[in-house]
Image 1: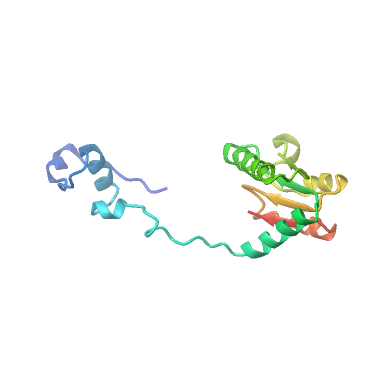
Image 2 (image 1 turned 180 degrees about the horizontal axis):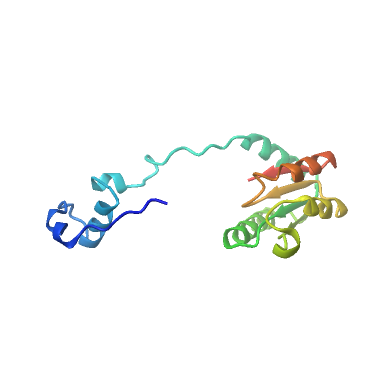
Length: 156
């Protein structure tokens, strides 16, 4: 963690005149911002995301929906995991697709994210496709188990 020390009050007179709120100027300057343009985060300044495998994921999900395959969303118990799960479920509801369920791992029993016990539950429920939200990127053993059981996995 980088520790950034505040600007001493004696140096406040040396703050740049940026035509911004003085508190904002002080915060930006103390964090090493050299001009207001460095603090602008419009779409032209954001790095392009890497969407490796997106077309394959789209193909898997489109085929599953067209063929009425059973899809299970695997979320997580934290705020962004629960929100991601709700958003994914809402998407499928909004397109009129009902053959979808979700699983939020129990923190005490399952631990975090996609794991072998969730894959076994998916297999017991004849799930064809698992879609992870907010987890799964390091679930190599669980993904290998799912694939060996004929379950496709989309990791988001």
